[in-house]
Length: 119
Image (cartoon, rainbow, N blue to C red):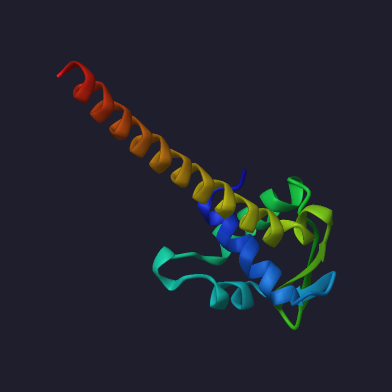
């Protein structure tokens, strides 16, 4: 399971790849897509990219173009499944909340029935 920062960076990479299996991006491209309030910097993004690469989400090649660092990112199977897994997690959370609500309602009704019988 990805941390919040890894999740945001992976979302940015997925958005920048735009449905293709690979893309060429700079750290500034990634930073422009990330939320401004999180205070990301290029070094932090690079560390997160390397962590995601080690986790098997994509292949990462670092290169230089006109003195600027560029990343060649090739999505792997986990990278392609990222959005689907995120939607599945949201469905699981919604299901658990609904199940807790139904359990609370059933407990309340059962309590009223017991109170009516013995009270």
